[in-house]
Image: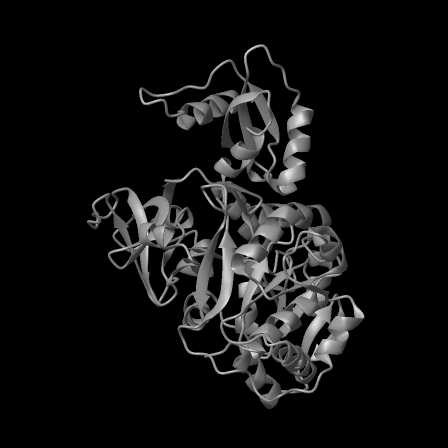
Length: 506
């Protein structure tokens, strides 16, 4: 079913409920929200954009993001959310690969994409966008089947290019119902606060709040500001939000500074990186039982496992510490297993690759049959993450079979950074790894070997990265070496490099 039908039904049932907030100010009730989305949908249809087409969104958090998103669905098209922090070249590549018919942006993003985007752009801050949403509706949302693509999410690629994850209407419905069953309930008086990027997990949690006729709040900062959140939450409350572990850490630090116990915050769902035990213990101690953990990935959005607030806050039940360090148990609409290399299920406590199957799992990658065949095997999505499951079904992440770095909740693949650095004529070899960091979870470290007789300054490499990839992906530290450790087959031993960094930290 078309997700826009949820907005249409809510607006019909509760038209006067407040819906979209810019900071503390209500910008639209549900009647206006739906009318704007319907207008955008009509405008897209007038341009010939409909079922099977793609429309990209590349902008910072703003209430217009939701208007454009539901407008895309109202027309029956699929949304292509692009991380607003990406370099314009990266965003332009996604627009091209998705063959997007149109790109919704903000003024800043439109300026950055000028001359790069292969598709026409409309800024949500301009007159044209306001004219679009004022168009007369053609009626209800376009009809979509459960296996129609609604969301094309680009995940960072291990081969230097991101892959488009096809998310269907059924995937979205399953994720939404699993949230109610396994993560949290939503009530009409609740509000979701968009502090993390709406192109990712935070945006995916809009559906539950639309269904319940709850409020959608974009803070004045447009992003994450711990002081701002703690200041406005008591006035807005009850507030739910999605946060990376590093955001939780900062939220707790500021709460301690100002003497806050998290008043107004109802639920903080955390995911996207390792949460240190000491950090979540302190978070619950300072702010109470407000925290829920989920584990998912783009290929199974927000929907693999969940650790409910009772488990996160439990300090009495035998084995509570082990559960706190897990990512929880399988969500209701999926099965989770730990498999060996041959696909056989391992016994409780054994480490293998985490696999998942069920209604939340993607049907495949966008026009990438090789990657699809690699990820979806024997009915399972092989996540690439290593872990173990105990006898009660709690899954604990052990390691990543891929070398992905998670810094501040954002995924960074070393290969992508390495390819940029290798473009420098004085660089012979590069190995990029993650180093544990108390603030960011991990930071990017590049080990660089120069060409014989050549010298390169780290500032030159920084400029190269800033010219080609997003700022958050560039290395925080450069280590210049005469050679990289390798095995007998010539493969770089990144485990040795990580061990070196760990020993230096210790």
